[in-house]
Image: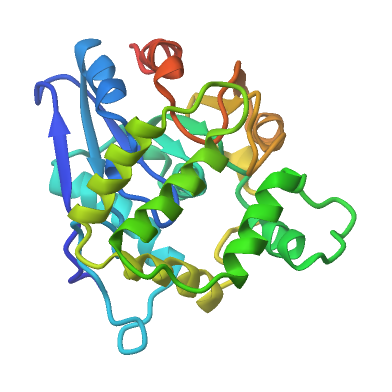
Length: 292
């Protein structure tokens, strides 16, 4: 599986402090907004973002012929670092990318200068199972992570029962509706900007349907996440959550409790996306966290 091509791009001077941006499951690297990346670059950082396998411009896989697991998606982090000549970097991660970042910080601490996780869940917490039980209307065992917001559950239940979109316009409309949900209710939603973003995502994907392979990879090895290891994280850690997080509400506090010395930051109004209103605050916090 190491033959899958991974698309990446970098910004800033090669001599600047490196930040590797790791996006969430089934998500292209361009979901790290250009303006946000520009703020980090202007702050003296060498910023790298990439498309996970089976997303965007990275290679796609015939999963039945060449199955893989989230271990392979995690190992792609090392491949991207190696391809850019980085022995170590500051990892800034979103959603399921935060699970990858936490895993890397435990597994290869010498490669992680600092860790920032945004809108993520604690490694080993079984977040995927929590979401699945919520969607299926099943009770959560005692000690489970907090469930997604009711509107999250309702949206994806409807989506699961709906027929596939008939054409490009319908597919993009659905992607905008999903972005609106994940955006949350704390800030105004810019539908025109969302359409431009989702059209860009649609048009640059080699095969938009290939993102479903990330779910198959999760099912291929449900116990991908090691349990009870976050106390081993040595990297200085910043944990960020939006006050209107619909997918993983309250998960960030649990991460911060389990990683020694981790700091928790709540961004007012933000949901599970990275809206323009939050770019300045997020970039300032990350620049401070990655200084020195």
